[in-house]
Image (cartoon, rainbow over all chains, first blue to last red):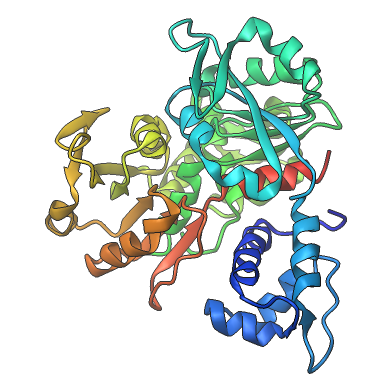
Length: 203
Length: 203
């Protein structure tokens, strides 16, 4: 992905993709207006979203349907597989292991880790929960750069340091703390409560 | 909250609050620079974040520490309690029920709902998992306006329609679908996979 895409646009791309693939005949043209109408969205929004991909729409003609599908798939990385790990196999970690949505973006969860011996060496959705002592080896073997942190806030920084030490350079953090990372490591935070608080301010 | 605050700013406010409360003496002045230094953040960022609250900093003097605490607490709604419900008590729903972070923002999860009889009438973190047939009554009784949707994508729209019918006007949606809602209802989406995909584009 060349350009920094807003998460709201990115999460609409699989929606377009599913719709386009549901069409019986993809060997035809389709306009951004037709896509917008079918999905109950604004036409300008659809056009802006699709502009992040390499697809080229033509005025009054639209997109070649098959080319648009390929462009979205390429953008979403459906054709490559990027390995990722989940750290923390509590309720949230296990929910994410069972969650099928990562495949939409070409991301494959190869392992999870937990420090609770009652949880390790078990499988959730065919993903093994490994011991923390195995992390360095598993991450190296699968060449993992991407990790999801789902541990309690009190240990999140320590876990993050360990992961960075193992070569992780992109972290999705669910713990409600601000992680300190060295330069070159990217962190995105998902603070569920903060999102709910923003909604509550609009009531 | 009068002004639309970015989620990244909002999730830093509890961090400032915890830091300020950890100070032994709050009956003194503190500058945005001192806060920034203590938390390893940029001073401009701190000042911008705090400007969303009603706190008034003075040049070369800073903020009255106690007033800043009150302003952040007021902004975060720590002094009011807003009831919310969780729909779907699978792995993610149960993880959110156990998650303590909502209290930071004055949000109280009063009930969860699930259509699986094996899950209902049980408690997670003192929150009862109710039958779906109870939703209207529970939502009305607690005057709930805020709901979190953690059901599979295939049933999310149906659940959303039910919730809106019960008077919910703010929805935090974890299902990877775009929900259609009537005007006046706010939706925020948390698409975990999309966030991970954005990170993966930066590797």
